[in-house]
Image (cartoon, rainbow, N blue to C red; front, side):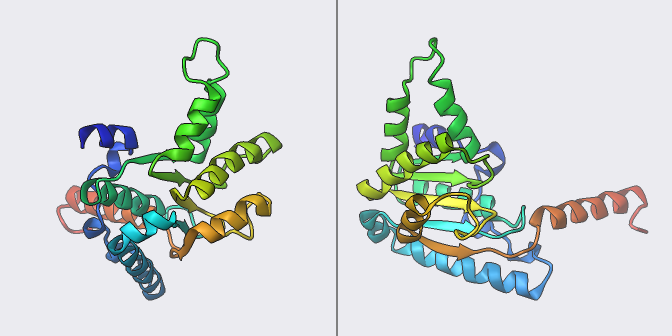
Length: 215
């Protein structure tokens, strides 16, 4: 299990997260909580029947326009659930980091080749691509992500995305978007920043300590 946790490369802040620790109360509006509750319901059902999803190569596309709406936290929670409860290898990375890893293979001093890296990204049991769509899209970027996504599509490998864009606004052609649509359940997240709410709560607690509870 330790090897799998290391391979997942989850950020330290997310290593202990699970669906049970995902707090719907951080959303400040009734609509936000309802949207998050629906998203959680879909994800719980997905994980409940993960063996079927894994066999079919069906993943998730978590999206909302708002940054900080809890998509990455949820993706990390899913990663932990899959590693601990489903004994599944997971690779977690942002889209920009994936591209940087590919570029590093062009360095003559690097042992990893581009083909080996793309093969690894295409064949790992579960690949989580965080912040998909934030990268500057060039022809080279389109080609690399097409290779990865098509490889996973053909091989029926589970891919989980988080994005601040829906499939209609992504700067990719339908070679990629149509495959994502077919290979993923689309899960809408609240248009509300969890990070803003957490920052406000932390500040209130600090002010309360400073003023002795009279703030």
